[in-house]
Length: 247
Image 1 (cartoon, rainbow, N blue to C red):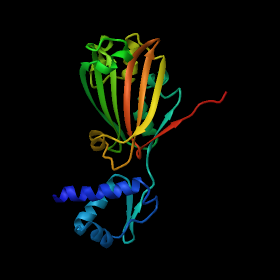
Image 2: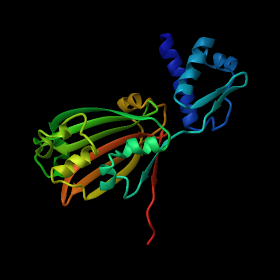
Image 3: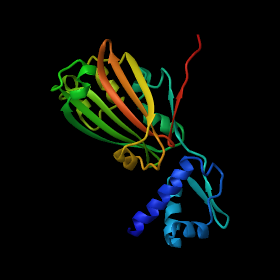
Image 4: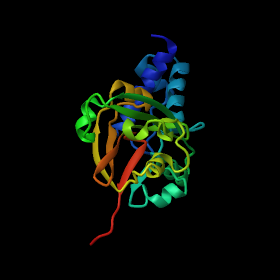
């Protein structure tokens, strides 16, 4: 095993122990000599592993004192009527970018667009399996750390030849473009879950051994389903928070 793989392997073990609360917030990790003996690794390799945890925001180092588990710094996803509102679109406040920025993170995202047959989504959209969907695949980052993967699917009957098939959909985002096309979002349904990540998600979100949160949002314009957005979020980097008025 090469040196890079070795320090990342050690970092993953320690990350898994932090995720599973073997080491709690504020706990001091074992000193370097203990880690060297435990992992049969060099001092340099151990220091690289600890630096990996530090860069991921999982630990902080006190010079001459030790390495301590840091409080989790998470992006809070607060769901309310305002989050996906027309007013937000008109202010050009995309949900993730606005939330992250308001919480003191530097938000960013990367986007890929492609097309594929509807297949298993055909029944949801009430179209043929061979009908095409426009796929908008995004990686959302907070302070450079990937915290969410989001894959939106929209019928190409709606998106063909429009800004919805561009990487940059313009001011107000995809929902503003749907509204421009006569498909104003009128209803959202979200299905929330949790599971273990697959290999790609683990790599893309730079995860240890913890679970991911999943949200599938279905957006309707009247009775028509116009978007299915499947989101996968780091279980330690993202928090879902729901609030509503009592009757």
